[in-house]
Image 1 (cartoon, one colour):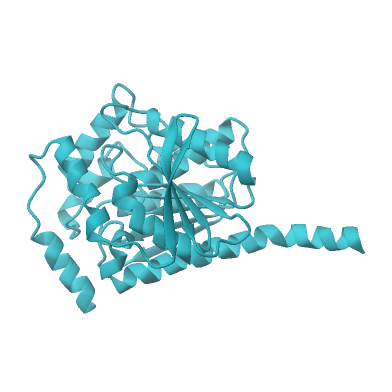
Image 2 (cartoon, rainbow, N blue to C red):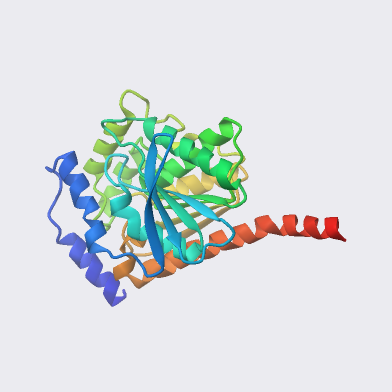
Length: 309
C-alpha cells in the first residue's frame, strides 16, 4: 500500500465516532472540508441561483465548447453541500475541461424523498435548455451517485433527452440496505458504518418503500441511459451496490465501464489533496468524459462537412 494511502487509512480509523452526533453536527463536520481542502489552481467558484434552485458554478480556466457537468454530492441525502464537495467538483472540472454545476439540493429529514430527485431533475432540465444534451454529463458520489441514476431515470421517463454520459463514484443505489448488512463483517473501510446508512435511508425514505425505483435506482428500468462510468472500492461497504448497478445497467443495454479499486475508502476521490490514487481516479473520470464528448461530436462534424462540400 502506498504511504499516502496507509497514512490516510490510519488517520480515518482514529477519528472519533459520530454515532451520537446530531444531524446539524454531522453537517457542520462534513462542511469543514472547505477549510481542510484548498481548491486546485485554475478553478473559480461563483454562486448559482435559478428558479428557486441554488448551487455553485465551478469554472476551470479553459472549459471546452460549453461542456457542463451537473454534480450531485454525497452524504446519505442527509448531509453534504457545495462546501463539503467544492474541492472535488473543482478537480473534476479541471480534469474534464468542463464547467460544473454543484447543486445544493434539499436534504432529509426536512425534505424527504423525492425532494432531492425533484431538485436534480429541475436543474438538469435547466442545463438541457442552456447547452443541450450532447455537451452535458451528470456525475455524483455515494448518495449523489444514486441520485445521478435516479435523475436520469426520471428525466428519461418524462421524455427528456439524455446527456452524453453519467459517472457514479461509489454509488449508493439500494436503500433496502440488505447487501450492506450482509457484507459488513468483511469490510475494512472506516468511513461507512451500517447503522449510519440505515439511519440515512430511513430519514430520506419517510413513508416510501426502499424499493421505489427513484429512491433505489438499482431496481429501476435503466434502458436508454447514456454511457456510464462506475468507480468503487473492493474494500467499501457499498461495493455490492456498484456491482449490482453495473449488472443491471448492462442487462438493460447500457454501455457500462466498471472500475473496482483495491484498499481505498468510500469515495476516495474526495481525498485527492492527500492521495495520489484519488488524483489518478479523477483523471480517469476526466478522460472518460472527454472521450464520450468527442465521440458525440464526431457525427456532427461529419455532417457539417457533408453540408459544406
